[in-house]
Image (tube, rainbow, N blue to C red):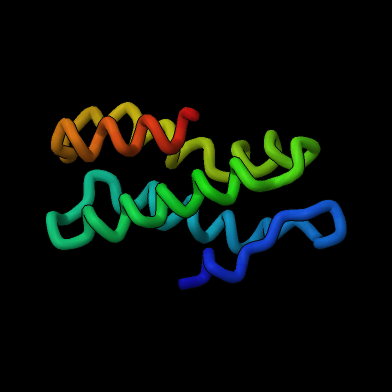
Length: 95
């Protein structure tokens, strides 16, 4: 998975292209086909891990890089997630 190679640190260039691809993928996959839901949730969990592990100087830039897709998934206007999946998403993304 592409995200396993994303490293955000002050000593590395910001991975704009990689996060733009993630943003586009997550945005275009909402609402997801049932067979893609678990994959999308996995990507969202990884994005949350990346954001929480970056230096504070880069957190805003990282969030802004994927903000449209995060907003779309957290809003879940189509109610595609189970309550437990939604709770997991909100707890990992917003914490």
